[in-house]
Image 1 (cartoon, one colour):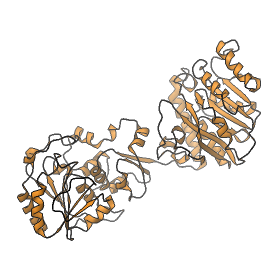
Image 2 (cartoon, helix red, strand yellow; image 1 turned 60 degrees about the horizontal axis):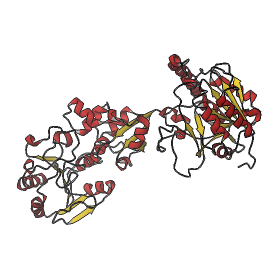
Image 3 (tube, rainbow, N blue to C red; image 1 turned 120 degrees about the vertical axis):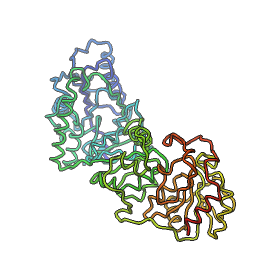
Image 4 (cartoon, one colour; image 1 turned 180 degrees about the horizontal axis):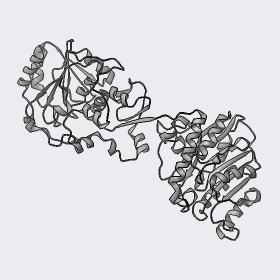
Length: 526
């Protein structure tokens, strides 16, 4: 990096924010560890004479004390908007570099120093983080400053980055940054609010062969003043008109550049493990509808989809950053309650997501059949949440004694720390989901209650038929007809099948006896 710190002109375009955020911006600029040579303040508002104002007498004095040329300069704009002011600043600034700041930003004291350290001969602009103090979030995995992702609406500069994140090249910058004056070209036909102004400016620099650098260590607080500036009451009634006009200009620029923005499709699954597998089983239908898009899955269990190509996995926290804290519109179970759903989970996902076509069993393009197991192992997944949960079978001890007479190896699966069943031949604790799929594919049969397992098996490339023991939950909703669903009576069903299942007491009367279940298992295995 260069060892010479260039002089720089700070440019602030303002409108009717004399006594709100503008003074904070001026003071923050004055308090930089490296001071700008000049501060040009373009006034598009009332254009009041501030020399006799007590507040601004202090601010002018501060700028003079710090050696800022002219003690700061107020320039009356033509009231044509911030783009016109920034274009004028290219003419009036006499330094190689310009630092643009909005009039509702507050850069931390070392921001300018850090930005300047990134200057190289091939660098056109350098920016840092621009964060709203009332909306602080960690960097989402899907945030992007690639021009193709512009309509995703998650600029990397808006979020707190991990400690010691390095400076890196990006396609475009936002709000506040330093840039080379002699290569800058503003788009002059934007509206007074200048929507997309900074993206157009900085991406054009990239097209000229210069790099745009994002340095996450430089942090500016963006106060998003609700009054004045581009949100001034003068523009209030024409905001939509201005934004629509500027967006049209921007889209034309994208066409000229040959940039095709990525169309994103998003799925949010803030549900249990089995629900993730229910969705996985209908992915062919999903990809049929959402073809030629970038697929983003915001999920609780990303490991379910790690073998699915061409999707980007993100967290539920990322979903809340993008869509807001309330994710009800993505809640499958809320929708099932609202529409009085009476079919199974994959069918619910299919209708909820408005997916086309018939159900297809799918292994990345290859159709597969359901089959009977051929191994010598019975895999048992005995619990739903816990042994005494309402959906968990209460008579495993007696049933296992009967299963031992089949001369097959009995193996219990589960998480480490789960209660082991007696008389098992083996315990496979903590298997990864892929390991579990392999084990199931090699077993004679699997037995579970209403938990994740039947959904995992249904989503396998070649599902193995198995047995599910039911008590209070409905196999028509949560089961699959190709399995043996053992149910005593529908009269024990919980009325609200789609609400959460935590904290429900077990009713032993709701389940078939071990003898009845064992006889049905023997018939199934014949």
